[in-house]
Length: 218
Image 1 (cartoon, rainbow, N blue to C red):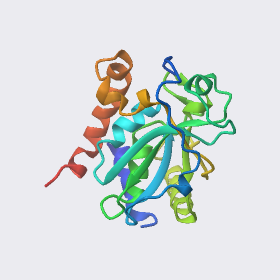
Image 2: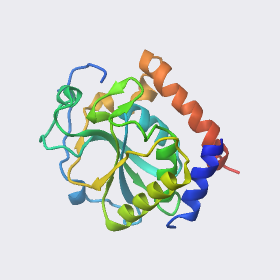
Image 3: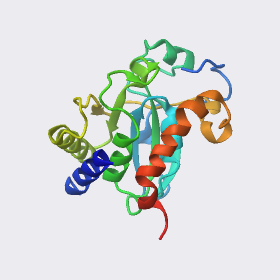
Image 4: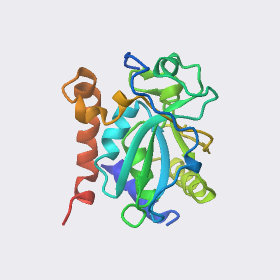
């Protein structure tokens, strides 16, 4: 709870592999910058915080987010498959692409949820998920996102909110490949599966304890 207060205060005071078949119903989108967002009031964020099943499930509970797509970013391999991602040789991280309304939820708030629902101090690892594909990462789409992310990261390190230095990668967006269809909306469709029960469910419980009152309608 103390850590939550420290992180939330900094945000407010800041600038205001599970083995499965890879080739079923795969969609590829190589460059989010060329995609047409119908509502010009919406914005985009790309975040990696370990297994994208976990991250997707957490952010599905954040109001103001209009679309979430799990995918791969930051590597050099074109059109990677999940099997290639799991080998850890593509350079890509498992990420989620968020389309959100900044009038309903700010980029700062998204980063508050991001930093408080995974461990940003472990390099290329989240729990038992190990590899560069599980790295903590923010792929910024513009200089404003870069400035906000770097300032909050630096302020968190200076505050001692975490006992170890934050290793979150903050780097410019270069590509995004949409993950296979069976990865999308994974927790909601597979909540009884072992990984969901033992890894994702505890993350959601933590999210509810930390952010429940903040996001719950008055």
